[in-house]
Length: 344
Ligand code: FA5
Image 1 (cartoon, protein in one colour):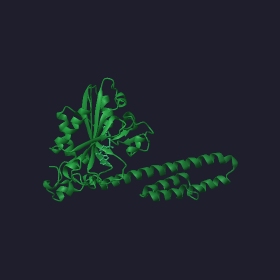
Image 2 (cartoon, helix red, strand yellow):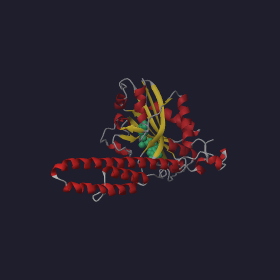
Image 3 (spheres, protein in one colour):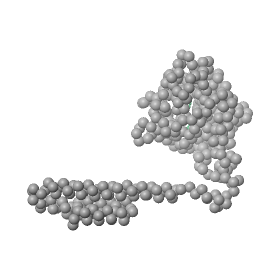
Image 4 (cartoon, protein in one colour):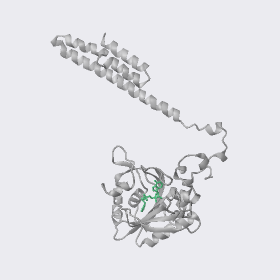
């Protein structure tokens, strides 16, 4: 058998196959221990010593060519398979029309987006800017700049989805926006940063793996805990359109000092205890505090001159309290029967 013929034959057979397993089988038929190439290697054994070097070289070249052909075909096949899968998953935009689903049955804006917009507008009126931040973050913005260095036990407070490089992650909280916001502007300033956050947690009635927070930050010369409490109260009053019962207790977050947990009386059970509030009667919705001087420094702000206040509202839980939704997993279920109750 001549070399050119072997190459052509392999090429032709590779082209005909459209399953990865068959490709690998073909590879072993040609390149395996007892494959077609091995007959050339056998010739090597019986060749005269002066011919061996040249022959060995050409066998290696041939092997390289066959391997290249195989790799090229495999790569193409994988690409084709991915394209096919994508085709299958394509969204059918004509589905609604084909099935004659009227507008009135389509869910409108998602309930979390709706409440988010409402809160954005409340803060806008109080002079806050609205900032956005990336979902894929680095260690610096999610932890280090927030006074949570490597090996700090607080890293375990939030179970993190890490990327393979161990440097990037899906942000575990919107406090990352504090870091970005401080670097963007000169004080005094105030902004809110709403968005999705991700935690590798076991889910239950009040815990999801993907949920929403709304960060708030204000930096100015004369700020105190009194300002913090004022903003929290305005927010809750506007959202619930009435005075709601809250309690403030000390809370530990490395990026604030002092730090607080602001809990709301559970509106689902009026404080008597249910699965949502874990029978406590109170729900954690608004952790907050005065920004730690080290965090201000990391953001390029002199803590001797400026003070900061910050809060991290749990948006989904607030939505649940407002509408009496007793399981956070419903919010993200995509169940149209649930979603149609909200939005316009
Ligand atoms: C934080 O994420 C801090 N970054 C908040 C903060 C900001 C504190 C600024 C101080 C200053 P925490 O892990 O407690 O804190 O989450 C904040 C809120 O998100 C909680 O009060 C709760 O309402 C909500 N939350 C937390 N985990 C979940 C979850 N798995 N599912 C739904 N909501 C959650």
